[in-house]
Image (cartoon, rainbow, N blue to C red):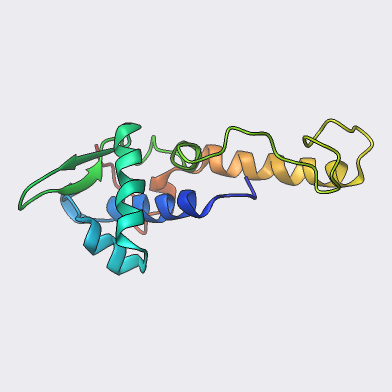
Length: 138
């Protein structure tokens, strides 16, 4: 998870921003982009991917925008980031192919416990855990 893509990082930040809104209001892309200082067109594509993945609901019109479609207590950072994760395996830092194939690799021996902690953090940390005040949003 160390290689969290820029898109995944933008997605996590945007989801946290949307989740922090009062009364589950829909939030427009322009507002999110301005608040988080992100490129609006890129962010729009990212949010639409999250909507297709079932984490966000989107609506058009004057009161349109994006809102969460999953309770904050159930939405993990891993679920958000996985929408943008490359399906290819992590490559060995020393150039020995896919990470983990060389059991004697000094990098792998030191990296494995750190990677496990990162996977645990992303897999068990929910959006609700990172909100200033914990509240449930559908």
